[in-house]
Length: 177
Image (cartoon, rainbow, N blue to C red; front, side, top):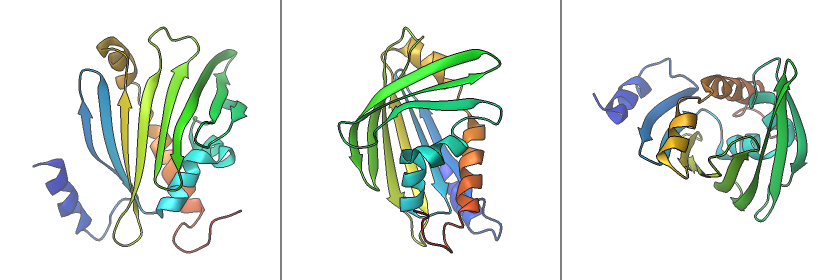
């Protein structure tokens, strides 16, 4: 059964999950992932651009996230460190396009990584009924770079994001300011 057919079958069930990974494609230099959330596009977008919201879901519990810079606008840049148990990792990048609430195009790079930047495109699409489909494409500088990062996706981050969206009562309350 295809991912789309499987999704449609499950969509008809009474107990539809609040997040569902629909498909994943891995090419030589890229990874494409698609998820659907039971939350409005604006809320899912804000969870990716507001540093207070981002800090609540991006890293696992027990890992500290320290923002050095965060300017989520076209032409802006960002940098943060994550750490636990004395080990720190620094990440940084540039926002090449921020079109609220529909698209983010950014580079992502780890300070200790020799593979170079990753170009990431996030498209936030409105679903019938008010949900959000997030299509994410990550393009790497080489197949080796993709391979190194490709298997390390933190699915726990998606669970934490879903939890945050649920806590916000995305469909029943206005966005917090």
